[in-house]
Image (cartoon, helix red, strand yellow):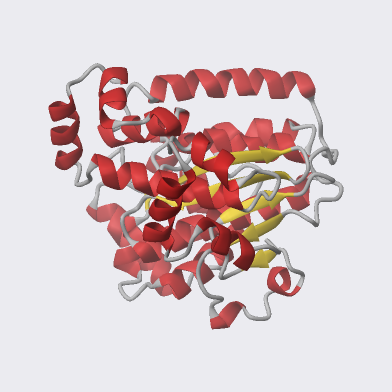
Length: 338
């Protein structure tokens, strides 16, 4: 096993194996995979190793976006307050819905399969974009659906009232989920412009059941220390992505290379070794952030263009149309109800 495999938190995976969400045949195949790789449930938990999502590709060789979504949501329905390792204590002790959702900042400590981007608005609450990083479209759908649906479930367990928090997924509704309770209630939405969790402004400060401010502050401090330590061992492409996220308007290859104390040729070479180019990584992040910002109508298109480093609106519009097939204004018009 590779410690850097993108996967599920170990305890969540073991709880999944012991639930009714998987068929006995699937459980048997997972255990055979673990034995082949010299591990088992106890070892995963003891060593705090993520259960690789590539195992799901082996167990479900025909897995596509639809099946991945169905599995991700079914697995999320098994999520417990104890499922998420270092995030479990701050989850339980959080004082508000906002404090729970903001824990997605520390998602890399429990799963490297999904990353998050936050966008706050005084008028509209905040949205958290979710992106998959498995390199497999079906597994990305599984990971994003699992992460978002698990959060909805945890909010139901922890908050007194958070029904207006919604999960939006950027692919078509699976036939098997047409009558799912969250779909019917409008809490789970498909065909969205970007996968994200939306917390409306009236829900941000909703109180949680087991608020413990001291425990929460201590837990957050510990999480930040652990995250800082982990960043010392992250892959080069992860370091590049984080640099771009911190300052998208400044993120030329030269700027990122300087920040990482390497030459631009070394930047290019090391990214190539990990199977990606700087342009691909930067444009993926800019596209995701642009779509998330455009859903907030309190920002002008010109403001968004400037934030993302475009010198004028025309250049931004051309880039956005190349990414999505529509102009920023057309995108905003089509998604005016989002």
